[in-house]
Length: 436
Image (cartoon, rainbow, N blue to C red):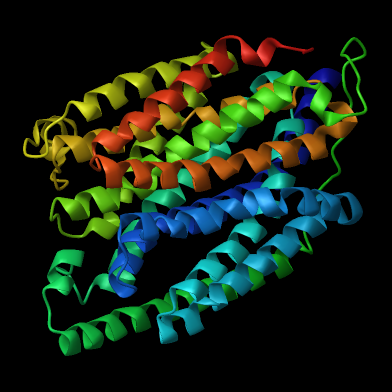
């Protein structure tokens, strides 16, 4: 009886932190996956080619490398909760910077705003991910992160749809090709109108971040204990933990392939002349939501965290090969999967890019607990190392863009094979290592 009462108390004590962190993960997703709409949008506003447009993602994700260790030092001094409040404030600042960027059309200001928002998300991610790992049993950590990921990717579904509705509802047929065909004067008028439509939504989001920061400062989040098992090897240097360093490498390639799938689908659709390309990212996010739901059911009841990671990598390899061999004219895949529901269909190549979301869904929630296992008091520092792995979202999309310039947008997806191969190796072998 006492055991049951203690179990109920533990669940109740974890509920408020879970809800609080869940709200933050929703914010991560909404801000992050706005990039899938921003990239094709800014390609029009600032007259960019594909690789220039992908600098939107680069400046956002490179902040995770530049700011990860400084943010971990801030966390050491402020604690997790105050650090999260600071992160929300930085995001609000980045959102406000979109106002002068939209007024001037200076691409450099857009990029700086992306970096500031990425910096805010860095401290939020550094604090919240280990918090979710440590708030309950290690064996179910991936399931808890899957709940957070479900909120994250649900926001990712909404972000491109809301962006398209709020910003581009008055420009339903606009595309890079149609704008390029206009006269200089007509194009200047259209671009100014489109840019001004960004201001109100971004100011609204900035206000929401400030309100959330004030609310979070008043929530009582319990501290988490960072203790390693007595039989776990203990080192003073974070570099002495192979499961962490290799996990950061796996995370680097995972975030890279995830961003390629989520943020290049609009560019690819634009190259095919599809309409409403700023909303195509919602297809990828929807498949990620399905993957997270599967993770909630399967982990750890039927599959372990490492098995989920390996299976995701295998699925990613299969879908990537099919993508490289796919058709830009047939819509058979989309027709079979969702056309019968009345959802607009897309070419097979675009549908397969979206399907990569299913392969990507469980990588993040599986890598984090595997990489942070046995770190004890170095968990916060280890979290910062993992956060630096998010730089894959900056580097791999640019490599994709460079390959696309040399070959084609579709052939450049060959880079996915390398990413999923290394993720699969970590799920099979790398996570088990406890010494070099």
